[in-house]
Length: 206
Ligand SMILES: Cc1cc2nc3c(=O)[nH]c(=O)nc-3n(C[C@H](O)[C@H](O)[C@H](O)COP(=O)(O)O)c2cc1C
Image (cartoon, rainbow, N blue to C red):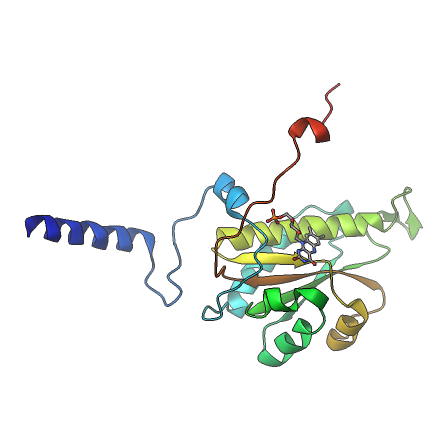
């Protein structure tokens, strides 16, 4: 009996220290940076019962704004589907990804303004041209997905998407290149870690 009471007290203490008691049972203590890196995975099955608020998405985008960009051009823009109507519409614009993200409560379209990063006074600075805009967009999105993981969320970056339809849906200006759609939500199952190449295949020291 005493053992039972002690076990109960231990569990109660554990719950109070790890959970904030809201409906999503979010862990309040921050994971370490390494935990964020290793636990982030592309998630292709989301928990339909867990929602994400506009305020939480704003926190993610604020984090993305901390990313570096060419001459601080900040060419990345975000279009966020969070209403039932817009979510349903975007689900039909991600091709074969539809099934994977059907329960994600937020879908974020990321774009970059062309002619900013990699340009000086309207002229391309080097051979990469608007590739630097795509580079900066990737950096912003990287900050966003890592911040998402740190907040207990999961993501799926999708390159398979229908840019023309998304442009029309969100009235995205022609001067912006549409890059990834990012699904945001809570994992419904533990994802696998796809194998990485051997380090020596991707690095050479001189
Ligand atoms: C630019 C980009 C586009 C991607 N497009 C898709 C996609 O359309 N559908 C999908 O299921 N995964 C997509 N992925 C996820 C990758 O398949 C995934 O990152 C990779 O397999 C490594 O797995 P991990 O993210 O779990 O580490 C994309 C990832 C990136 C960075």
